[in-house]
Length: 365
Image 1: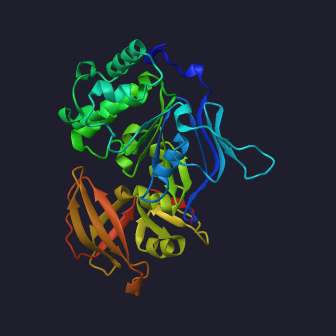
Image 2 (image 1 turned 135 degrees about the vertical axis):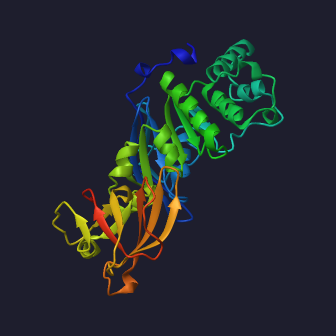
Image 3 (image 1 turned 90 degrees about the horizontal axis):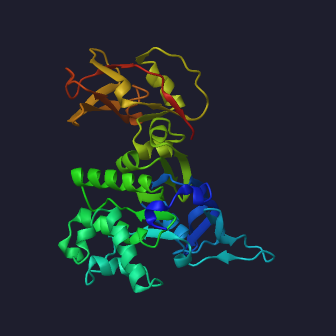
């Protein structure tokens, strides 16, 4: 059966199931009872700041890191299980038997080998004819069949990435794992690479998990996004939901979803902001105010809200505001941002009157 003929129907409906996975280095938890699942055929982005456990999670799925405890199922098959119970058997399937393809951040192509030899390296169990057929088949998928005798240094960055994809897909993995796959390219080349690779994965029903710290890559490439904070999944949903409806301050801050104020400070701020909605303020939690919903005008009064910077950002203008929740207490100042498609008639240092044109989003602690 060719790679092209591989379909989801042959596999369990869930590609990856992780339950209570714990990983620690030097007695410090890196993954703290990590739980998530990936439906077959979907693309999941693990997103988060450096050190949050993204790459560790990826390597744990691949079998390159052994957890202290937990369970990992791939397409309904248990590849790792350890309950730390003396009465239950430990399962730990080695990486080469997990049916997983892995693309490293630097692609890890062997510089002294041709494209064909790089792909063949991952096919040791095939005879010569089978290996030749599999190499051609995987190169056809990435549209680089005529590059077999080239060396990595003779390829562009985009071509190197496609060869890395071909090598990862040649053994016919059920799951593709990618660590920062787009970090070495920028701009239009990156956008083209993401579009081409996403189309390839979708055309051939290949499940995928990839790691990045760039939310723009998650928006463009993933079906679902999981934001990781301190070794745990803080939120997993469609990228638009994670961005527009973050569940916590940690997610909102990382996604740069908007301006955050505690409920206590929100009441003081709203006393000086025109708004067309009413909320009962609770005793704890936060409000998220979207920059694009803030309308700014110059004020002759001391509002406690001052313009401190203006930046052109392509789609419009971004305004940085100094906001004093208590205008009689300068130490309480916080920084907010507002956006407008048109340049506003305001200058740095101006006192501002603000109107909020939508309802804010409530956040947990």
